Amino acid sequence: EIVLTQSPVTLSLSPGERATLSCRVSQSVRNDYLAWYQQKPGQAPRLLIYAISSRATGIPDRFSGSGSGTDFTLTISRLEPEDFAVYFCQQYDHSPWTFGQGTTVEIK
Amino acid sequence: EVQLVESGGGLVQPGGSLRLSCAASGFTFSSYWMSWVRQAPGKGLEWVAHINEDGGEKYYVDSVKGRFTISRDNAKNSLYLQMNSLRAEDTAVYYCARDFFPGYSYGPVFDYWGQGILVTVSS
Image (cartoon, rainbow over all chains, first blue to last red; front, side, top):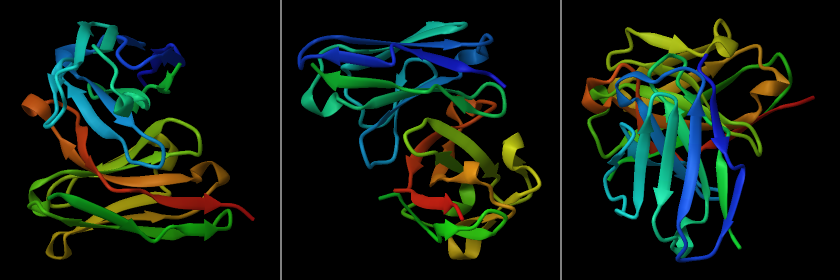
């Protein structure tokens, strides 16, 4: 099973600041099979990014993804109040499809 | 508008059974793979199982193999998860999710999710 390790566990930032979230995968991901989700308290996850850097429908362009191999990054260029949430990465290269443990972006 | 609505959760004793349902609307249900994903309280996400468009292919995470069965009824636009021999570690919110295979990828991402249903396994 592929393990995804996200860092930091918690990121404390102010609105307007840039957020950089990391996802490290235990073995190389082929063919860009890496996605990111956002989850707010009491809500279901929402797909943000797939194929490392492709934004899902309706996702604003302040969200961007990058990386390759085993190291991936989600960047939020300027945090809006609605962006404070938990973010998960997911690999869909090898079954079982696995998720990272999450990074909480909280208001500083 | 795509909607996925889960039902059937609740409190069950260890060793017991429960059947979850997911009612789908707003898209052609019979054209999509579907998954169950769960989230233990305060924890991360775990993919549990998925099923292909006609129900002929089913895959599970190892921890539920032999205990859980995923199924679907395309005439009723419904997805199901039969959970037997439940354990305390199965306690979680269970989400029904639609599979999306970007660029004909090997595995899925999950582009629409239900609101989730809580399953608690406790004596």
